[in-house]
Image 1 (cartoon, rainbow, N blue to C red):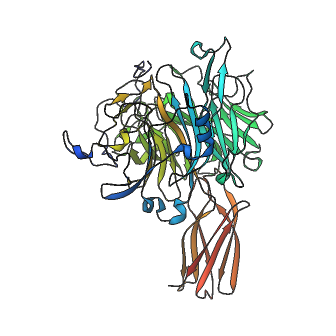
Image 2 (cartoon, one colour):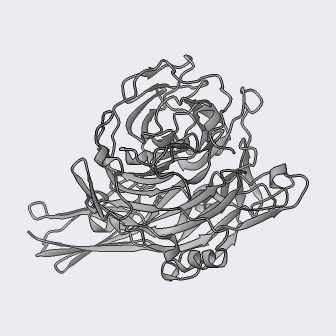
Length: 571
């Protein structure tokens, strides 16, 4: 069996002094030993409503086989098809509505859920779904299977049919999902999933096309960790940024599969141990410079490059940090002291205005872990080389690898995590599932949570479910949120000043400025103005003055592909 195997310790690059972690923000009450026995199962399998910390949540069973793609697959493979024993969804719509209102809860999430066999470590199931927040599966696919009969691959894969797993999962645009495949065999690695037209109402899998960016001869690509689309308008190349198989180089391919830009770190042979790139992003920094931000997992740092020159500008975190980092509890990690405020991080991403979001795994190569895994937002002052963690949400578990943390237009955060040890009857719901996707508010309340129980596992006893550092059983890597219409927030008409104001957000978290047009009609007067929707789901505010506002105003915003409108009535 591969469960609970110990891992080799590495030289620590974090504070192991035993400082108490900051106070946890939890979904369920904190109970002392022997207390709350009646709450030992936070939600029964048949519950439809529960209350935690004074907040009421609807509880829904999510059935992946409700979508014909998955039900037909299960029917054809009844003896081998893997499904969780239970998937539950906890939702408080008021909290997902936030300050935007109903449209904020009308979006979708994209998730890829894979199961790793407990005996041999094979991936024996992988379902990628588009789901409404109420748990309705609107689009689905079963990941491809591979049969490896070569003699050059790892021995345990010989003559074995196994599933691929999609770890990299990103929106290319408002109707296209990019998928990066985890497999040891040659062939297609990256895919484009077309959700346009009636795809979200279809009973069959929407069109999935392989992307021509695999080159087995130079080992250029194949890493499943990440993929980002960029356009000629933004960086001079219409193509895809990916990480190589060895997780230590970056390649930018054009849409024909030709390498147009690449990066090999100068320190590739100088660090002790592996580098392990697990996220890469091209974006404009706070000063308008086209930059590349790389999450370097095994160095517990974020690295910044200049895209045009390729110059390595800085590292933030870990042993080689150029920054002092102050944690949320006030502890300051000083350059050169060999400690860091985050470790083994995943999906570290620039989110605009000098801020980064990341999933801090809190793991340093051995157990016990340094801290509970957490979602983090960090402010970075590049001039003074100071970074400050300004927000966190602790998961209450140890997710040794994987994990996501993305900001939403409401200011909420959405992410994924998994516990190294599952406690099926825990008073803390977060450690009772094998895999969880969650949306939390800025004040730490859980707004929405999808929990996946194990398949055929104990419903009463705690169990370990990791092989070295990788999860066995069910797990998510990434999560993406998108909408079919633009989001308009806080539209108001001020009759005293004659000003109409509102904020607008794109349908997905794009990485660059987006051109749009705002049309505002008040009474018989119409004003049209070009606007720029900010990237990273930052707030874009729009104002327009009118001499005669009338009794109501109509606001509409449109891009080349999407639109939204709202009416404001004089109170």
